[in-house]
Length: 505
Image (cartoon, rainbow, N blue to C red):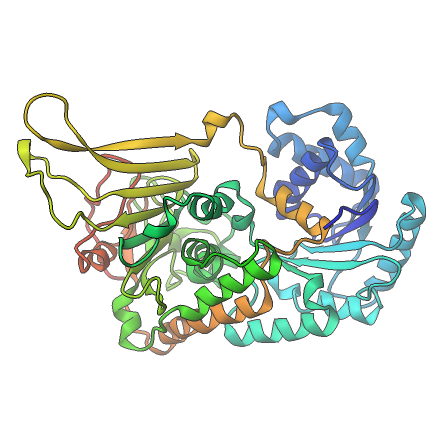
């Protein structure tokens, strides 16, 4: 894949939060590093009544707020802002796209762009099915002298039927190779390094299976509530917001088979196979394998139902823990436990591989300490790194074996080479590399598994929604989910326990 010499990036929803907080800082970092096309422009489109100058002023303020101070370069910012343009128009209206075509032609003449367009949908999901139709009607979807590509954010669909309809709309307007369904988790350096850890080191591959691994944990939790996103979040919930995209992707890279080649087809084929291997959950399986919760007021923190734009009797989940199994040769019988939630004690994303204990213990529990099974922790954020727990002899007399950690931090290599996951993924879009983007069959396979859970919650209103105090590790029922396997969650913050009372809402 090669970077083009010229490109216009069209951002729908250019006056929104995603553009200010994520897209523009990422584009600025790429610009500053000389990694954008030589002739490059951004055309923002939104309903907000900006002109070019007001748009540039707004983006400059955002850059100063969201770019690290050591990356701020006034000369580079000034040059980058000169690449920005704005069209005040409603992306939901078909007549706006004739205006869009005119502005694109003007910019093409300015930067000598052979009609290379990358469309980025930084809009609410309700416009995801509208914009490609309008682009097609105006003829802005067809490759001509240049290329057309479209980037769409998660959530891609609200359930299986809406995901199928979205795929139909997109594939009617674009070819699959033009569509980039983005999940910024796959742009994180530490997520990509899971593949390197597994497939570049022969020491792990013989052990990466049901013969040596007891169970796997995948955690992605936040220590904040939903803030001002209540109106959006209450119609989505944690399963749609985090599980069927972010955590499913982490599950895929952890469990996938080695691709025949590390290219777009090879990598994405193996991702789809993981989704297709998930053992379906139906009926009472869902009740016993899925724990959903909602945070309650505690220690000065608001409860979810007290947040802005959240109904007082909302049953939207802000926490979810579940047990999954893969019905394939490598992983048969190995449970995967995933959890995610708001208002946890800390913000952390990590994968923990729990190996089986040694078949026979030579060393007894001397000094009250028993040898523990090996454990591999892959820290995605924060303090990105890898920890391998081994049993080592305590110095001195006797043979007391203690758990010791071999801890590698990416900080030891200096600053992480990717300042922002969005920067990596935008650069891939520009180069036409779809490897780290979600293919249509992966979207559908994922929803085939998760859709029955959503329908069960809808059809069985008595299905429990457990309250948990804000700042705790979630409902105690999630601990019971693990306890059935004789295990417990790995909580990264020490000396924090679930000491509050829990109740069912």
